Length: 485
Picture (cartoon, rainbow, N blue to C red):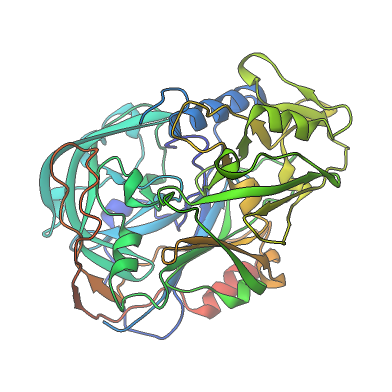
């Protein structure tokens, strides 16, 4: 995995994806989805997993090393693997199109795939890889690229090719072709990562695919994307089995997956990079935790992070409301343990909203430490002196809401999950299959020039090249997949 805290990724996985090519199917007017799958957890001890999560998040957000056609919509089913450790989905790349499983991560903005040149290395064992020479439309930009995640690093060169996501196609999407991977960066069946943050935090300077689509007039019904993530019910029952993981929607929301209104809160002015929200309310067991105002309580809403990280003083105050909780030490410093049989209720509120969103007690338990004690999913992380926000809000929270990320006006919205959505929690059955096919075709932004940290041209014009029919899974197949127990 690119990082143990980058677990939200979306899509269906494809065995030997690099060998399979799917033809563009005929058009049907149905919503479209990229299935999410849950990946198996690494076989580490509970204590090692705590240390790995903390180190991974520090690396991802630069805490350890401070640094500066017609309108349309689509959706993809998700896969949930490793007891909510990871969600991933599929994209299709090249001509002819080949499907690859990637993490879909709102906490970063770069897209990369492992290339065939690393296929024989230990770090890429079993990983389906991208072969540039097999695509007639691939263009090598000869620009070096490197990025570091908590569990490893990626090096390679930038290129351009046709890329499809949730039924949409960008004809010249810039992405990195990884020629070197550190051990543990990703593991099969993943092939890479697609960042869904804004271009301003892209290491490559390339415009993210979703942003190209959202900024191309008339391409999406609405300039947004949305997630519904499933929950693995029993934290005591570890499983390596993949499960249906929810739904990723692009260009519209899926009204069958939420109830009531979507409560949108704007991204603070000038903060469009991460999907930032101000945490304005936090309660535990009915007791309010004191929060500072403004940027001191900013948080990145991050589908690629498993847990919730916050400032040490606030997190300590938080656990003081849980009887018999205790701070862990050593490599696990920042985490807190508490009796597993404790009843812990948590709620969070954002921006000027009056709505408080509950966090399930089953989501709040991250690990069972021993026969009596469990580790909480909220942990302390000091981001002071870095460009990272004070809070990183991951899947522990996001499994409890329908989350919507809107480009214009820039905002994040949450809504209550519907009965149809929560009925998918813990379902067993076949994982979703990848979708290859296009609904609208858009040319990509111009390739970045200069250093790989270049921001590129965010105002570059994009041209709609044409309209092709396409479909993903039929609704009946979707219903059947989630009806399995």
